Length: 493
Figure 1: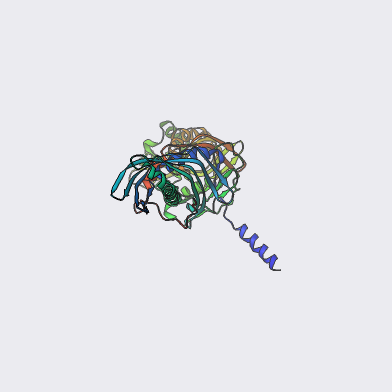
Figure 2: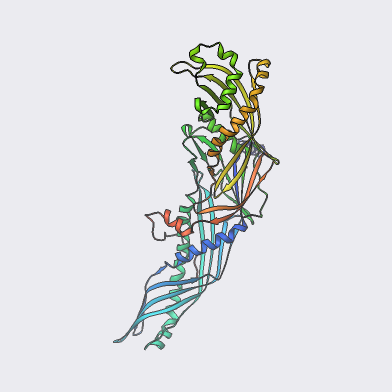
């Protein structure tokens, strides 16, 4: 009975799970590019390592090794791959560090000192990075594990006490190797938990699209990794800025990602676009009014001829008044995505009136307009853009079939007016685009859009428009400029 109850609760919880409006898949093909840019950054971070002074004595010898600096780093072999449990694993093998330090030796009353070059060879680093969502829906690095080892250090001692140094190096270099090992993992911990998180915070969670509408890219759950990709599920919902707590239930088909040929894939369900149009509808933006000179001259003449019988019955002061044409969407438009293409269905009222100065307007007609727009999606940089084109158009009267017949001559002129005068205004807004959740400095290139049943996918490659260090330095926390102390290090000699 208890088992039945648990299963029932699990099914109940899953039935109320929120569906994503947007999904992103990062494939293993992106990892080589990410690794190259990441290793350049890690090389610079490792070169900031500072090693404590090493001092001691043996019989009558007193020595001090100080001012140890990393001069160069060579990462000859490295691998970055996904792991189902730890998300990302970076393995570096057979790397080497160039070192420079100051030596000081006192033997009885004889002193020797100077700077010397050394090399740390056979360096191996294994680090695993875990990703999760924070309470606000932001992606973050939640944990880093690290193991580091250096197999040997070679120092070319010389000078008067070369033989003495050769003897002392048998215990000086192991000490240096131990200290160096202890500094590597804190650098990786700081790079991930502090610096990489500062980069991930540039991903939008809830941000404004324009002065009317915002978009919510909250992660719905922790990222899921497989051997070949990393999947992220976002709410992908628009909302009116004036009603930040407003939300539209997602009843659309969940988008699916199957492809792995490109570096990254982004999928959008019909809900993504429906929430955008409903948000603008709620914000009162889906209406347009043309008065006087804004009404095309040919259309103005046609409207006056069509309603001549009604106009001549008006007072002489009203007959020559400016014409007004108002379009008002009466219900939120709806998006339909099919393999053949994407369409948007709109129902609106078209009101035609005369607007005499300092007098109430005189309505000549009110009709219903049904329109269908084709939508072409493109991705530029990291902005999703939409190009709309008017395909089908129909007007009819709500009053009588006879009046609907009388409106037939207006069908083509109104459609032409919409194509020439209204669609460019709409496209000016939609072509500005909506940002896709991608960190600053990274853009999409070579995108390919594919339509499916009730969702579309965009496959693309990645391009670093800015260096990783440039972006991280821009957002580096001012209060944390030195490596943080990680949990007990897994470094070993």
